[in-house]
Image (cartoon, rainbow, N blue to C red; front, side, top):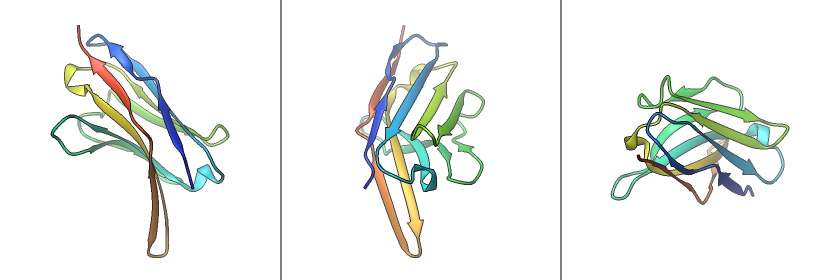
Length: 119
C-alpha cells in the first residue's frame, strides 16, 4: 500500500513558476513508476509527465520544455517543476504511482493539488 500526498499548488501569474511535490509513504518507493497527471472540470485526466523506476522521463507535448519531473528515492518524493506557466495549465494536479508485476498492476493516486494560473 502506498499513500501519496501532493503539495505546492497555488495561485501563480502567467509566466510564473511552481514546484509540486508528492511524498509517498511505504517501502520500496524506488520500484514504482511515478507520474503527474492533471484534470480540469469536464475533461479526462491527462498525463503531464512520467518518470519510471528505471527509465527515462517522458512529457506531454504541452509540458515539454517548460516542466521537469524528477524523483528523490531517498526521500520517497517526486517533483514537478513548472515554469513559464500559462492559464491553460490551470488544473488539479495528481500524483500517480504504479507497479507492475506479471499480469498485475498496482496503482495509487494522491488527493490532488490545485494549480491556478491567472493574473
